Length: 442
Ligand code: GLC
Image 1 (tube, rainbow, N blue to C red):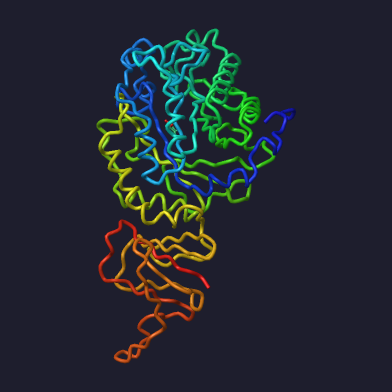
Image 2: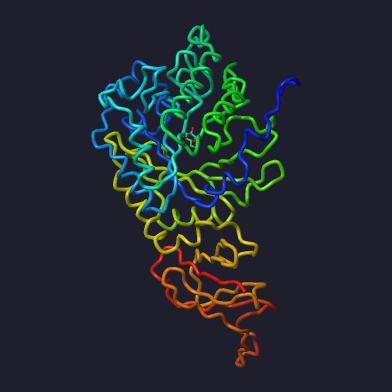
């Protein structure tokens, strides 16, 4: 940070009350869709395979998602229990899904020929979903974007001549024009998801890119002016010059161990995950998560006070393939009966019993049983605090046992430590991927 660099005042960040909807809703859909969907081998294919523009052009020339039906996407998101959606308006490849006036590298110039963002926004609103855009700070197509560690042309024998005349100042202005389009032409937008900064990631003498490259301060001011209530994620590299917490902190593809702390405080946070490791459609990827894992990722997030943004990578025809449809349906089945343990919930004020996760909403506690035990769950410190207990999926009573003595062995059979409550379970797990017990506190 240079000594003269201006700090970003707290007005540029959202107050808690403006984020209340987001924290309440907990669960959103990420959509990664672009030219890489045709390659169908990861959205970083251009970088991974070091593909030059001329070769990558074949995806542009064949982009024709004839089955694109954003109403179906939005309906599937809603049925899965998701409350907001974030679409890659532009990913690192630089291709724009909307009719941007400042580039030719856009959907309206492909065989598709129409603005896909407009239909997406309308479809989300019709299903009652909040609307977000992902916007890549990286751009592997823009003529002013110099090579760096991630750029497809990073290993050219002569990057210096490739980079000659490339001007990040012009590129930063281009980003502001694009963000102005996205945040002016589609009504109220609820989330903007910038991705990403990489200070210190130098490679062969090419520096990583930072807020100075993006002109993050100007970008953020612009966003705030155009959409005062929008949630902006934390990847603009401004944490150390900000006089406030970022609107949302965004761990990626792992489950945090505890509530993420930023500047010594509990952050508003949202983890993003994939169904199968790739964000863009990946035909041959096979590490698809099981329904149990999917549901547990959601529970784990809320149990640590966070949100989950779960990704789908539509195909180049514009459809969700069967694996994605099935994964969404797994969420839908569980959420249809158990959403009460997710919406409006946060980390509980009590420690969870063994093999369980807890969420809480006021005087209701939600005990998620991740590993079904034999007959008893012992909940320390809860004696005298539970008014009633039931399974959430069918509202059947769960009996709360008093301490009992085992005369055969002269042992306290259940409820060993003082103050522990024991919940009596059926021997067989109910047919729910993660059963939930709703505890009404006194
Ligand atoms: C990473 C990747 C990217 C993906 C993003 C989602 O930063 O660069 O492809 O869009 O994660 O968080």
